[in-house]
Length: 317
Image (tube, rainbow, N blue to C red; front, side, top):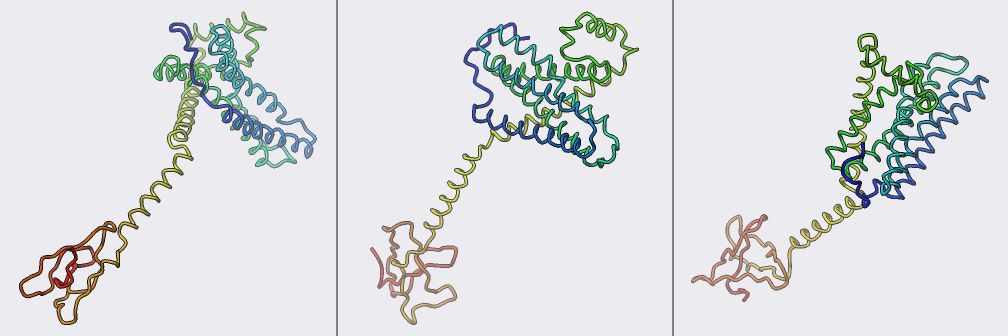
């Protein structure tokens, strides 16, 4: 998978240490909420219903840990391959929690709506854990081999994940069975390949599940790209810059009453002969008008508010 070009030892980290800490805390909090709901349900009902979700959630954390290790060991090919294989092996456990919705049914004395919230909390947390681990590996491959290879890698991985979920939900295989029962697991997979018509469910479920995971991950990826496109600090600075420009424009359009032109009584005639300020672009701005033969008022310019009139006797040089 990672053979071919040598992995660049200077690959940029996908997320910063601060971002990693915030993500870890947020996902830990979400996991804690789910476990607390299971504990509260046990206190009320005295039954061990949905305790299997806690174990499945623990397994959902493993791919994220292997993805972080892969990013840390990207300079060592052997360690990188080991972490990548373990990540791929345990990755189906994260979205596998979606299939735990089949366990939902009325279980008095706990109301059904409580169980729905309980199971959904595990489902969403599992999906976030899985997609974050895929995102880390996606970025790692893209930095090393280009964005096209990165997306092709992601599509292939999510398709295999869909098949892995089928093996877990319908065939009841676990990730560690690759080490404990490799022959039996390989024989089961080979039988599906040899007899596709007898195993239609495997192909249909794996295809639809892979499509669902890829489209959902694409939306997840788009949200991360949107966040990086306009950082909050840059957006704040842009707003401040626009406000500063607007203030400067407003200052430039303020009337300078030092250059107000007075109109003697009786000299102004017509509807536009009115007293309005001479708008100035700066302290040194002056209006100049050549006196007419009879000394009447002369228009020297226009502004949005009307016409600026000057008295030749009060001409400014």
